[in-house]
Image (cartoon, rainbow over all chains, first blue to last red; front, top):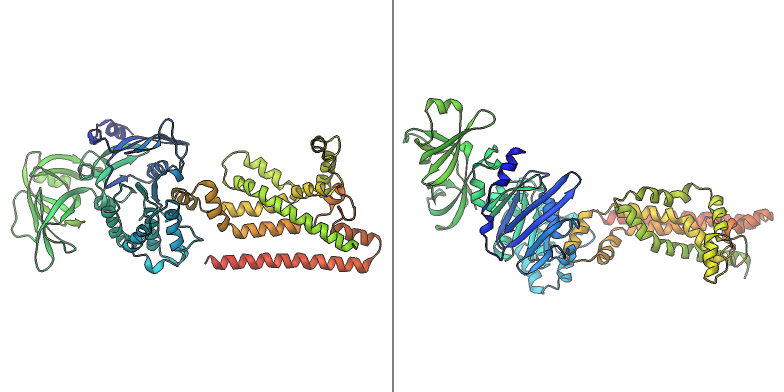
Length: 371
Length: 224
């Protein structure tokens, strides 16, 4: 608990945000659990709320949607107030789109009628309905009933159903968590399409680092109902003082530009830390991507070896060393001003006399190319 | 009119009106019982279930006293200028509504409790106000429960005897229902007529339960 409090006291960058942002202050008590937070969120792009199960992520979304009438505080989008000292709009009067963990389609209605349910009540245009039927490839299943659809298909219908109800804010409550890996991979491109084309802010609740890295523009870390950190996604992901850095899959996420590819599909990626090479889906030169380097895939050497199969070797400076629970050491590296993380054994630290300020070579075993 | 037809007419009218009133009153009550987290749901639920275990004559006795000129219900009806309800069709209707209450409320409550609350939440975020949600989501999803509740309420009212005798007596064309007529026939040793009537009621009850099973099966299949 002490650690969490210390992080909570740390000032976050959110205060300098421009004023057309989304203003969010919520207080809600559920037995022994309480949610208490104040945030300013950007009014565009994807904000991911990340945290362990039971941290209050879903309750936060429900409170924003008006499904927790006992919530107090402020929910204000640029020109609309859904909640403040005097106003507490019920869910059906908030222009919100919500996608639930298990789709929550109306079981007695066909796909078509599920889509039309909110669309009709929001007095949507026919073109809007058709647009999202096309974009989410729902045309072949319009006359089917929810029970006959796969989990992934149900979730696509739920996404379209929320979007055609003309929301001003789309809330997604772990929409991929009930799906297996293959189905998840099938839905992610649709989520990215929505992010590009819906033209509204998305608030996405997740406990998957992969989803955070792929989708998040802005990131809020939540634990036991309190905000631990909030800020631009890459900043928060790479902050070494947050619990994310202690996870087994801790790592660094870098923005990169595709700078070339060879005949075998190996991409060169220009990053602030230097050029990295990775295999991945074919991308045009100049495309902006994100790459993720996990701490456990980074080893350190005092000299640059030419006789290695590793492609990615960067000159770095050791910034700091800190012990991890379990005996390993977490090494913070500075690669031309960009932070990187490495995990090495205690023994190696002593044998190579690793210390802050030492110039070493970071050997990176794998670079995961993300979108 | 011959006494049999008069009794059939009274019985169908009583059971039909009772069922209608119970569906209207029972739906909000069952909804509350199925969804509330209030501690009151336990005593209220017990009161609703009481007619299932109480001897009908006990219920009938208290209703008779309550409806009499000194009873609270009698006082109200007197004040409204309606006289007292005992030994009238209206009195019988009030008694039947109480007597058959659990047979309508329980199936409705079970049906309502089975509705996934996230589906209702989804409907709310799709701009449907509460009454709209009830009509467009709750009612269609609890259709099997509604049919069961209506059939059970109707059949149970047709089968009541003790309460009728206590509250309504045995007035032809006003309060004499089929079950009381059967009793009269047996008292008068008119066994041929009693046989016909008893067999008719048996067949009616069987047909009703058959219909309930069949409808239940059909909706179960439609949801697969």
